[in-house]
Length: 265
Image (cartoon, rainbow, N blue to C red):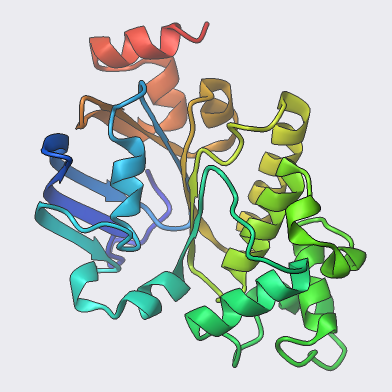
């Protein structure tokens, strides 16, 4: 869990966080620090509280008790839209807005208030040339290219895309607000292994090029082990163990972690 300077606060800090849903406690006294500029995987069995935890990070939900801080500030003290511009969220099942891919990207920028700024994804496509106007086809095309989709996808009906293509558009839509963080909720669960591998390579490249922090829930332990720098193991709403990925998988401290990671072979 290295790489931050001693003066830097953690990206997210959760202190004694609990969460209830439908009268059931889904998170129990979670205290956890998530580092910046890393890809952090969150693993655990079904019902462990993984998605419930990440929904707190950009206030899709608020905790029943405890505090969630982003860059040292309580998330509840931040305007929701301002927080979501900085913390982009990609859902497990991509949902496309009605219309074309271009309509989807423009709608996201307008809704989140990001239309006045050129997305950071445009930077590598505009070095040495004039920057395209935000919302223009040139700018949106550059955004699509950042997620490895051709510019001619702009005119495509978003609902006609394959699952993998929709997930890439979902990431492009999230990037339209220049986020510091991408939060991914089981983004490859509906993809076949080959498409999932390509998708994760795209995420890894974007993280490096744009200096993004990535927090990802995954049920694919091979994926967590291959791509993440740090891993959090949840079970029954509690943090069982967390730390560097290699250590957690190779020499887990807790018996529950050991049994879970060994279950995947």
